[in-house]
Image 1 (tube, each protein chain N blue to C red):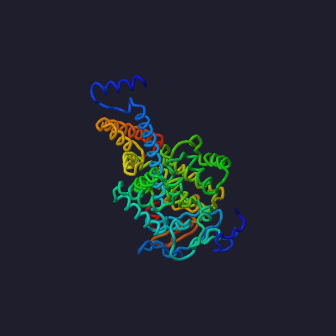
Image 2 (tube, chains in turn purple, orange; image 1 turned 90 degrees about the vertical axis):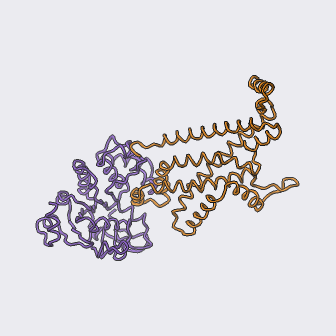
Image 3 (cartoon, rainbow over the protein chains, first blue to last red; image 1 turned 30 degrees about the horizontal axis):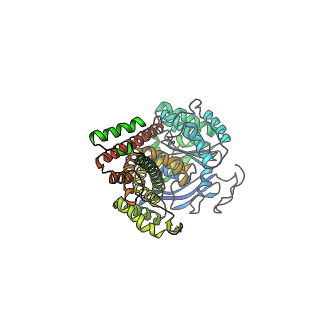
Length: 260
Length: 246
């Protein structure tokens, strides 16, 4: 994992662990005439936990969806361990093995049980040995504290439980970076915590995490760095200690005053 | 069996109702033969049409414009022309153009009337199945498909493991309907002399002048077949129900 990797399609550069794991440079993204990202740059080092906050429609979700190529970008560069995402010849499988993603609406496969949801992709996509995958899946179930729910279908689980299955499903692919797209936004307040604890565990174990979130308490406690985006640009960023206390930009101040 | 035959013989002698197939050995074996042919024809058509539908619905979402236009053309052709005309066209026009072999003095086509009936009816019902599956595929949330691609699934893998299993459950009632229709439409194979039930009934009533009796047999036969199909499909539907979903 830590060894230098050369991107499979030849584009991008050789990556070593002292370089940013995810390097975003001057990214522009439009949907038709609407420019959503207007030149975003950020670097995420291995093991860091990054929170992106900001008002709705500021482009936060779009940004992390660009990181695993669910959305394409018009201009700029996104390097994930040296793999250039903004490359028409991008090997998407190579990218998606590195990057896991968890969504706001969980998006579990409703026709499969919790454990099957976790096991499917490693078997189908990575062609891993079934027994090995089953063993790993059981560990993951334990990790997200869902023992006993292995054989439940998503429709039989609460929102928080489904979201934890979704996290385990992503982890089953052994990604190097995890993207969390407002993963607690659809949950009721009591279940938010159980999901956040799971993510905190991951961050503390050294998983590189990029979160789009409205959970300021979580951001303050867990994040290494916070980015505030508004109308497609990064307005301000910094480590939580300075960010929350000494925000300089009026837009940041206004946003923080509304939610803190 | 003896008693059964005697009853219908008796019935004929006393009332004139001639269910000849139930007491005459020759007609009986003709009838049984037709039952098997019909069942084979139906099963072959059902399977073929479902395969066409599954592949067709996938091809409808293909990147290639040629494939997509080809699918649209196929659906328009088979949906907008009568199935009986299609069967005749396949058998008499395409059947003449396909290879044949020397079967001892005369030319025998590799694909016979049974084969052409399956092909034409399969494509006919397949056009509808394609649209039915498409409606199911469109009912699968885009976000679920996205989750699959975020996990590294290719379009085909996501279709096989995620989209289709969900779409299938959504469109099963509509599929039921179309397959019931297809079952009944197999009687059109009569037009190219496939010895199925309709064709055989016609032969039997030509020989025995018992049209009303054979009509009754036909109705009961098809009512029974449809009942079996519907029962099986409902069981299938139930067995695929997902706890807590839909």
